[in-house]
Amino acid sequence: MTNYYALWIPSYQEEVPTIQRDKLDEVILRDIPGSDTIRLKGEIDKASFNIHLCYQINKAEWNHLYFICTDRQQTDGFIFYALEMEDHETETDFVRSRLSENLPKSIYHYFKEFFHIHSLHATGEDSLLPVYHSKESIDWNNDQTRESVVTPIIKAYTDKFDGFYRQGRDNLQQCTTAICQNREVTKNIHNLRNLLHDGYKVKREMDYCRFILDKHSEVLDEELLARIEKAYQNFLTYYMDLDFWYHAYLDTINFSDSKASKKWGITGGLLGLLSIFITLFLEYKPSKPDTVREQLLKADSLIQVKQDNMSEKLERLTNSYRPDTIPHPVSDKNKKTKK
Image 1: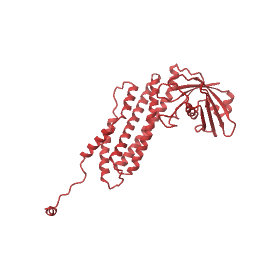
Image 2: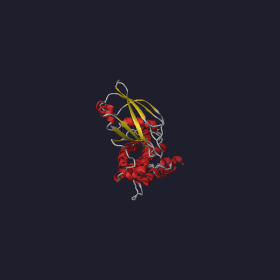
Image 3: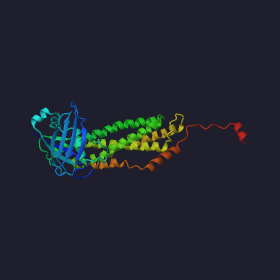
């Protein structure tokens, strides 16, 4: 029995996958529930791209599998493999049984290390992407096949962008509210910095997502394209808002965490009012988008906000704000004394 797999090696430009390392360190699988300890070791042949995978269950003898590369000439990052296994082997061996159903994500992520350098994100950020499995040879010229392969990948990116947007939006609101109320100001500014760092890693992954969309959008469902576009724009809106407020607080607030400080109350109030206008502006969407590609580029361009422009707006607001203290009249006695 032959199993076929389509593996996407994340890419952001047209290129045939190339081998970055021909031998991988031993690892322990993490995503096969109900099993005991499973160790992997792998090598790849530079000429044929065939993969020799060794695995060990608990302390038993090492087993060997040979994944034969059937197509490595595609320029969209996809590479295709075939694995031959006997029926009786899948009935008695847990790893082979799983491989007859699909390639576990941990093994897929392990294989990507042969080809993929994590230049746009940290190691492990793309470990949730799915693998396409078939009992028949994969015809990459067939639109239905490409749709079946690419759709789960786009859905995985959509869920990731949505999840970061929803959770990040709530975290951003909590941090800015606490800062405006003069509660644990320094701590919450550091929290904003951490959110910005995490958001940046997700934003970098959007380059991969945009590339695969550009290559295969014609075979994808319109509803899915609308979902990924909305998730993409929502996340970029959140990321721009986060970037703005982190640098605004960092540049205009003196890190005083004293509850007696009037400056925090004044500045926080001004920033809170400005936040409403900024958020309303960022929520605006063009009523007639041209294409998914153009919409993604327009949304991405929002990140290029100049810092001096933001600082100028904050300075004008601060200068125009009147103090919240009422001047006390000078008594007649004080007037006479000054004379």
